[in-house]
Length: 326
Image 1 (spheres, one colour):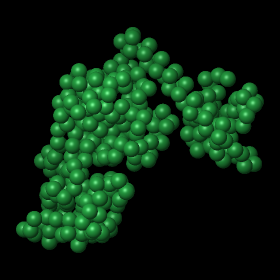
Image 2 (cartoon, rainbow, N blue to C red):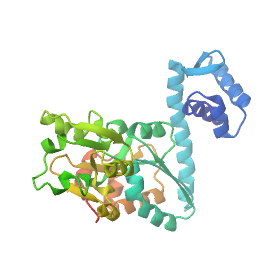
Image 3 (cartoon, rainbow, N blue to C red):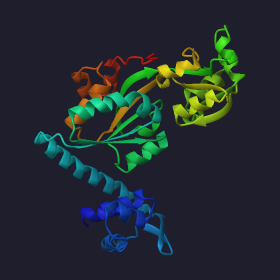
Image 4 (cartoon, rainbow, N blue to C red):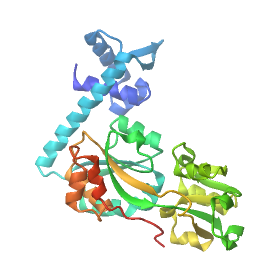
């Protein structure tokens, strides 16, 4: 069995059992990949795929275990290459980031610009998606850094560092009744309006959903989206009250929209950055994290990124709040 065969096997799985798509990703022929897979199965004496006719439908239990081990082997191969480049002081490589739209749109642009100026030979990739989509990218070793918010239950295989804290705001057109309402904002008041918010706010572990549940209130959710810009667009169309991250509010939004501080109504959310525990952290990745979190000393970051350190080391980190920047 060769590394090339393992790469073929993993790529087929990552392409949804589609050999044609895998061959395109690997710049090789479909018959060539099929032949390599059959050779691996013949060598192992077991079937890796469940087949329906000529198509692959899923992995066998043996295939699942081989996939887990193959990913680990290929990750170690990448680590060896990264270690070699690091020892040579070679600032070339790839920084692949999986994150949400809010981080990519409102938080990362200046960081990415500064990083690219410092490391012009490092290629950058930004993958936007939901938590489930980010997990899928991680399972395929397609990213080496994650930036997300809220629950970290799906990311137990990551070294995670809290970057900043944020709260939600409510957003309405300037002619909306709530823009002129002098009462102190409450969940009871919000629950009487149609709300526009993030898709993930409706998940079971969401602090948004929990806040209403604790008061036995059922919010009227008129619209959900992954994209804060989309939420703002529909707020402008008069579809309801937007409830979104404070970091998504820009100065231009104040021309026609009114921002209501609702930080006391919902639990504060933490944005964190995560790196697979088995990954060798290149110096340029460490610098990228330092740019995101300049409030941490390099010594604090080194401790937090050491997989041998206890999780309590994170208690030493004073995570700042990032609120309205306007």
